[in-house]
Figure 1 (cartoon, rainbow, N blue to C red):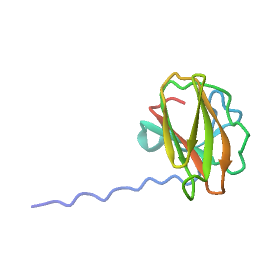
Figure 2 (tube, rainbow, N blue to C red):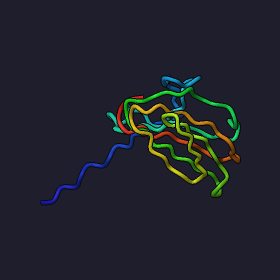
Figure 3 (cartoon, helix red, strand yellow):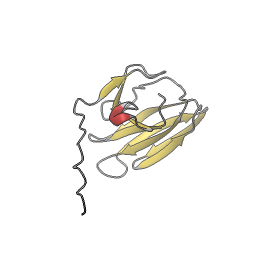
Length: 129
């Protein structure tokens, strides 16, 4: 006899984003995935819409104890641009783009251009903030 698997139980979180303090950030960062969700996740996702943040830094230079991936997206290619400072070196990203920030590296970014619907997300690989 073959037994049917029991149906999966859906886990849904709707009160998003979750504001969490992050070292170096001027305000709590908006998180969409946190390490304590769904029984523990090895990745966290923070970030948000950029169009109102042009030339307004959201964080001072800071470090994390885990790698971070910046994910820059916009409705059309080229509609968002950020200036990333990584260990004293300036980099410019134009959407769509991703950039790895190694654990322990001092970093921050400033939005230089962003149309409505442009986002930058920080994907923290590991449980740290």
